[in-house]
Length: 474
Image 1 (cartoon, rainbow, N blue to C red):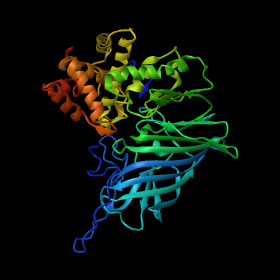
Image 2 (cartoon, helix red, strand yellow):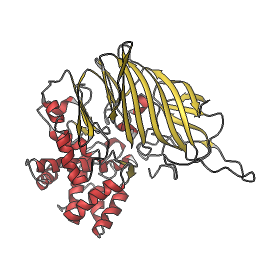
Image 3 (cartoon, one colour):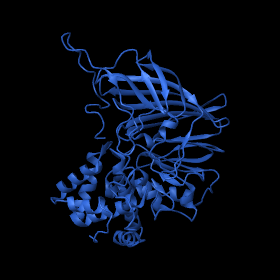
Image 4 (cartoon, helix red, strand yellow):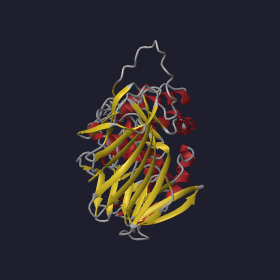
């Protein structure tokens, strides 16, 4: 994410062991074995910053959504088919679902009971689910979708506007429009069929599929085959100029709100998406997804850009002063750092934002604006070193603060200077290839950096990530 107005860039190991999307059914228990000890899955995944985000007891493999939205009365109805694997003997389990009502729920085709508890949908199947067993949940739901308003973290969720709506936000948003295990630790594939009134566009993640119109309604289909963190799922509904081409053998879908100029700063900036992607691939390794693109919205309530997987969304303020390639470089860098390699817990968000900030510096150097060293010096000289918040442990209220972005970017540069360019280049490509489609932590990065460089780096990371003082320049 990049937010407007914060110093140039404001924008789990917790996954249950053995719970993978291709897990096989557990072997049959012998008649002499004790009966399974069924228990409820936890109502939070256990993130230190946001303990109630996500849920425990299972691992989602994929979401397949069929949703209809009518902007005229702000009503959404949907059917979610969710495939998952039990990580424990489950008597019941939860999904996150904010204010939308579930009407019918089945587990493996058998009707299950469900009830709402705040923003939790509690599902009790007729029979317990044995650990290691894949299962399928189908949920029919609907109502008037909601949004999250937070003065620190920003507005997110289902954001209605005169032309339609935008489903967007970090660290949460998905639960406002579909039932979900809403934490990056449980990544899953994502399919969406979004039905809207004829003449209205609906853009989402991944590869575009067939489009059909019947009885005054158009269904748009999208598919993301690489597992995504739930906050990276999005849909943008309204009046948009859509350009679909191919870049590097993959679909490139760019969309710009019709209310923005056809050849204006937003359109010209997004048109550089392929070029910027190709440059970043020389530093980070092959682009990790099956599609690419971007969406420029004209909703003044969206004061940020977000790295929604394979297709970032950009708020209008980023282009108010003219073309802005830096924000495009930032969000595209997240496709490697934050999307393909996702964080395990929100404390580690510097892994996303620090590398994306560093990618801006790389792009500035590539186009001849200033060197990476000059960008580091500018950040180092302007940073408020007495501000609270450590880059590696900023606190829940500061996950989008300067420490995460600016000090995070400076940490990446300090690492490069400490281990040397050759080892640093090797580290970047190993990090993105070995952790592709998965999750990783700060400890993982430190271990890999030490392995690649042959150097002991505890002091470096302690100084730059886990203090608030001013380090010496590397």
